[in-house]
Length: 287
Image (cartoon, rainbow, N blue to C red; front, top):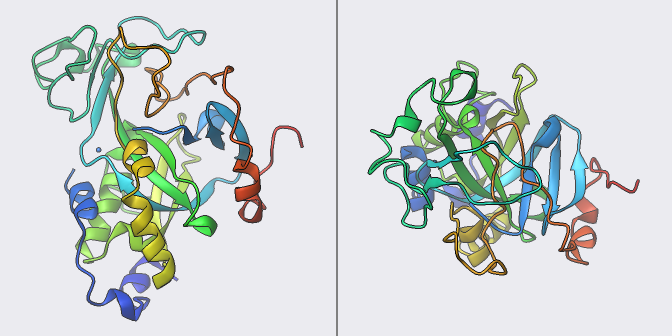
């Protein structure tokens, strides 16, 4: 079924009177956390629980349901080179992309628009030293009522305008779904790693509508504390208690890299069991 046929002919009866929700409106208009996340390190989808990789999927595509998301694109800036042996917060960061957060250790400007780190050429390779970030909370297609995972999108996965509606960057996808008068959490969304990109880059497309029962589960998950945490860009103050539970592992300054695993924590004992029935294409490190 093509994406156009899906919206024109594939609409379930229960969705005919459902109005756009605030999440879809926010995401369609505009860009994170949790101990469970999906990594794209090495061009492979990886499920990370409490810093430990529990499974990976080498398929280029992955079907999820987006249950929550940061309505604005955030920013992170690291003054020095990334040290894989450390997991420090950015020197300066913004949750809304407009001004540095009060927890920033070394704010670079009063606002992001005028910041010298926001100028092309200020970073490596001619890019900006300050990186765009947008976080989403997702559940896996076959386990809508199960675990919520956070995923962090780099700029290449957020912005742009594709002529191929099967390979849209996220903001274009959110606007496309909203323009159809439908909510993102009513759909199974395919996230696909772009094989033409030199760095990890995701594209998005609608796959099918959820059943009414799964839509209700997705809505409940989107309102859960873990989904709100997973979709929020937040770092504690530099002098905060090191044992404080952070919403999300600190991201590296480069979009092509991923945070170092936390060796001090182990994956939840039920994680593999909960995912077992839906991970036919996934393999664990000990297989």
